[in-house]
Image (tube, rainbow, N blue to C red):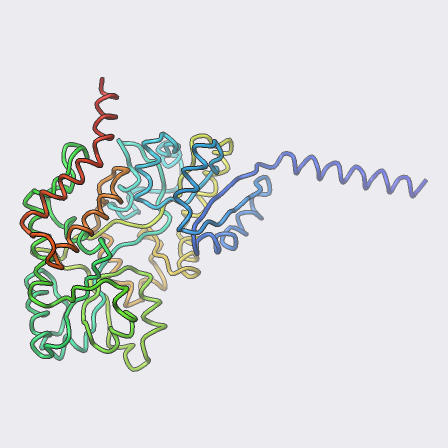
Length: 417
């Protein structure tokens, strides 16, 4: 009888466990790259405090993520929650794939004013909030302050004219070296310089290119001037054996890059040079300039059947303490100002990023933007190499952009009709 009683109790326990398991909400969360590796650890406390949610986290390589997401959308197999690059949000917004989050944010402890404005704005499409920033990225100057001091300057450039003057002084001291490296296979430096202008890169609501506008022409002339003056080498990064070694050897003094390079410079530069480099906000035409509002956000798919559970994860990952821990695990910079208190405030290399993040702008919020940016790179590379006239580059870029935006114009006209 005792054996039978124990059997019945065990069976009842298993039945309860099975019933609880069936009641748990399964949440599919896709994350990319390093973030996909560490988010499981980051969410362990969340899982402990939310036993009614079963997380199914899938890591995706960045090289395959975009295609996989589009395939999943076409096959009605999207995740509930996803990490999305900020420039991808307009594309999925055009597909009407993302859940608006304005109501959830208004009811949660996620104050919009605590986020860097330009980063938050990347998630707003046609007046609707379609994602919550998870981590931020921007571009600014990494520089050799010892070489700069040797040329007679005790601080980094604050505007374009100072930048040119310093670069020319560095070049004059060692004509065989360069002052700046602007890899021709990277479009980000030119885009950052272009975003410092008042005029938008696309006009009429993103229907046409605006590269013939005065603002882009000014940015392009400054960018090309670095090559004309011999201050930057006409090379891409595949032609540079090792950017950190070249930086260490003093082959260039200024390098425009993102926050991940802080860790790389600390690891790769010799101990003797660890006090010789620093970061600085990107110079603008007449003072500290704007830069790119980049990074990734957390977005909930409209077709999700677990939207409430997905939002609870977004809330958890948006907490300042979670964002600080995420930074410790990945080096990614937090999008909330309050998340910078503590270790990040005392990081000399991160300080310039904190400054720059108050002056960032979103790239044009159209699905075609990354393709247009690549055309900017291709055309300007031809100009630098002498294969295309500089004076004709803005009109050529407008032609290429207008061709890519043809479908967008058709869709907007149809929606208006």
